[in-house]
Image (tube, rainbow, N blue to C red; front, side, top):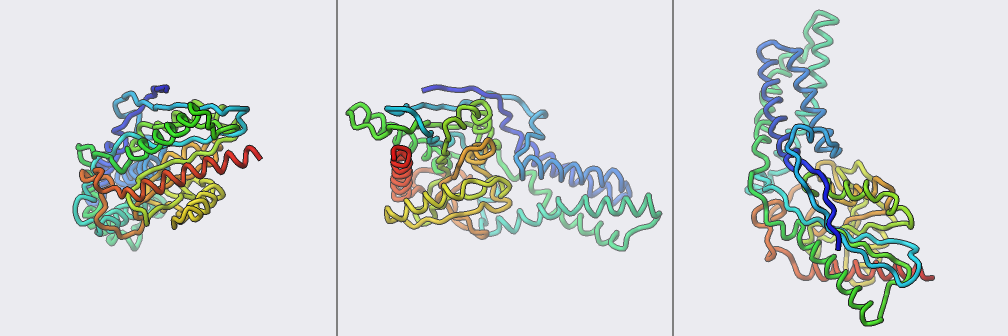
Length: 359
């Protein structure tokens, strides 16, 4: 077992939301009192920061936050013969801050988030059109008054984003300590097989990775992927990532990641679905939607690794009774059948890839 240390600024996401809410609110009042150019600059800064940091997971706000240490934990099981491929089993061991919007009235979650995001995206567009009218045409656009009232009303949705994340950390049983427990169990199985001379891995190197700082923007996976890019590409690697396993009927393999801005391996996801079907489990492929966040698989896909994530939670727009990112994320809300299915699918996938490599 190895522990790799990396730098991380875990408060960047939370600090960004608070700062964005404040700057947006100030920009609204600057507009209302006639400071158009300052208001337009404020709206634009909010949009660039929110889109860059939260939508694309860029490291925009990190320089303004306290630096801390993160720790990735990994182990490797070498094949009995020459390694022709590598399978990276991964999950993350950090937990999220509580999402207050999921604490109560979960069905309204999307209705609270979407208008706020639309306002943040639209405000700088209209503001800078107005700037053009004032300084280039010396006039006021027809939408001017409506825009002023519109952004004022939008504060109902944007201002509460200041309180979106609480100071409290969630227990993180389903998201995502259960995944770390599963990949450890799988590692123990293969290690035990080796000790009893029943070695299943002839040409497949198995890497077991539990990442830190996933909830801080996938920073642990990013640090690992960048540090080990060369080793991950030779021989070819396949990342089987596990995240948020709660419900058997919600098992899905991701084909896109980070708000659908990163393509994962559809071929790998489809193979996993076929393996699951052969084991008697119904799963589906899912292209993560904008606003749906991201998983560690994205960082491995960025560097050229074929990757997918197995999740087991509802992905509908309107959801209720979820414990994800709440203080109720404890073990009793994880279905044992979902864990069993995930373990069987991951195990069968490894064995199937080994069979392909040995053919």
